[in-house]
Image (tube, rainbow, N blue to C red):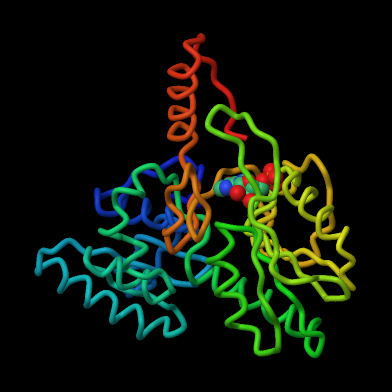
Length: 321
Ligand code: IMP
């Protein structure tokens, strides 16, 4: 009997390669699993156990046992018989028999779209992805929660929601479509450091609305050091809004250098570098419908290569931001 957590655990001795593959898929989706954690008695004879059944996996979050099958019919028939017995004897136990092709169906049932599991159109982009951190479904649920909170707090106040381009457009457009109240939108853009890490922050696209006396919500995709946010809030405050609050989908609080209060937060994070759902690395990956962490070596290698090419200096490893 082997127990294992989803990620970061020692790998159990799998009886079959398909089990390892299934475990890898579960890890990718952060679904916790245990390998062969429990044996069920199916039949007794003269007080002795005559037949047992040990399902391959238990997924505690889904309260589901999973038995994988090889494609040989003889084995499948035997397993089916065991499963029937198990269900007669333990009707409360939730178990599924899966062929390899069924993995994807199972995951789809729990909200992971096939396009997310094995996305041919994103295969190239996903080569640098470490694992999916937030599925499309999780993102949608969180955006719905934020939309409900904003709707409750701003009904009747005709708020002006301001997005900071470009990454936020994905989040902002989903958010406002879940807010059935009067509101208006505006956008700003600030300059970024250039490839050599040089530049001065400035507003490259300013608001079209006059915000004096308005209830303003600054909507951000991600707040990291907080430096960008501080600069933008300073700019907005000069124009006398009636109120000014921040709504951020991702909050990397441990990396904060300057603090500003975020009234509405989607996900609180550590210091991973995320891409997808509008977030980019050098302009790429914005179009992923979910959020993944990039493998550190993929962006570090890229930066180190650029750095040494640009400066001709000794290659030195440094963090992205
Ligand atoms: P800050 O000024 O350090 O808070 O950085 C904010 C900006 O950095 C965001 O608006 C993003 O454009 C970018 N950023 C910070 N962390 C990430 C990340 O994990 N993925 C992609 N972009 C990020």
